[in-house]
Image (cartoon, rainbow, N blue to C red):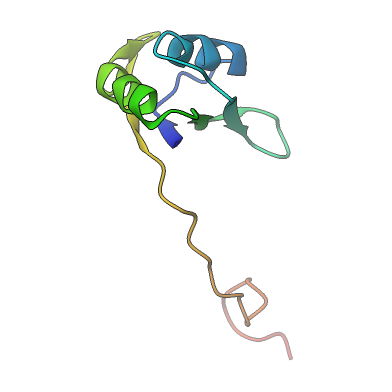
Length: 97
């Protein structure tokens, strides 16, 4: 099961995320999402756990729990929605011609 973890402290590492969820079962992957330019954490991540039962136990236990002064938001991740491509060049405003 893929699990969304929101409201992470910006200092959280992938190893810390793996460790927190590892207390509830096997973690196949833990990822903290970072800004592609600065490398700074965006404050959320994803954890994959192969066992749905273990994943649900982790969600129940860790949702609204505190990590470094922040209450985590933990739930089953939803599939990423496809966005239609932008046709206007993305700049907004008036056309340049």
